[in-house]
Length: 364
Image 1 (tube, rainbow, N blue to C red):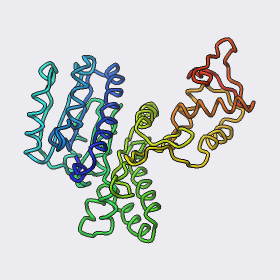
Image 2 (cartoon, one colour):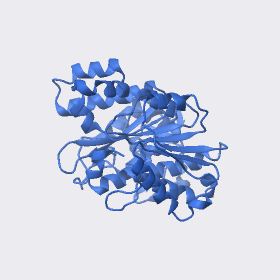
Image 3 (tube, helix red, strand yellow):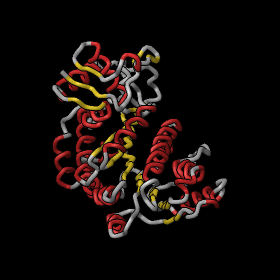
Image 4 (cartoon, rainbow, N blue to C red):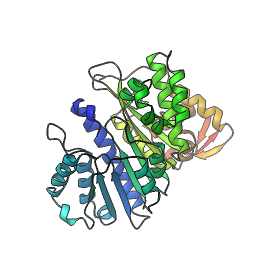
């Protein structure tokens, strides 16, 4: 858990934990149906509670597992933190959970300083499908080697809590060059040190985030999805929660979960950002109209299912499935597509024609 994140408003912490826990529940339910074992690994687990006594991510994850026998029977959990007092506090909190004794495999606890050597050890270990959660103090201990290990196996995925505020402050400090080089790769880090010096704050943030996501993709996380946390006290970004996976299915599922907590624009398109000060939707031009035009160009003359359109186009966009269906309805109204949806099967809910994932769409 990030040190200065303890100081952030509790609602930030809750949103972060809820996103991770919801995705764990979805991921574990799916993968447990195809694997003999699954694992959840938190290498920076913290003490179990926030300062006001609210349960943090490890306890929420465990409760999800305890409540679901399908997950509990196959789950291996590893909690680590380099602070002894945190590990002991977390151990006590775990032992007090109702039903914890019913887990066939009790959680494992360790107190190890995370380094490239630890990444090497994990790399040499045979792991079942694993969801890694990496939430360090600052960014020390994070490395591309660790990311590679986290996503290398079938169905293994990674959630990285990235302290943008700290990286932004430290990028040009020679005293922490090594830590930043391990996270971004030396060549990429040196490039950023040069390129970002004269950039505006917005452009610098965009550039650093893009380069980090590209680095994760090079390590095997073919699909990356960043979720921004804005600072309540200052008009700037605090952290990013970045998801990395090899499969479009997980990418789409995480999009839907992050969408629940995101600010949306006037078209209902998520910005994938959380700002406790922002209560209204934002106006970002006409993103849904942009999607309509993109679909026309990409799929002209083709015939596909609704789900295939979504899966083939969604990577690198901020559109969720609902946005694609809204765009397809607009295209049908404009007679630019035909949807295999017999009139008698058309149902209208809240003023919109329902559009199932298996419906065939023919682009003119």
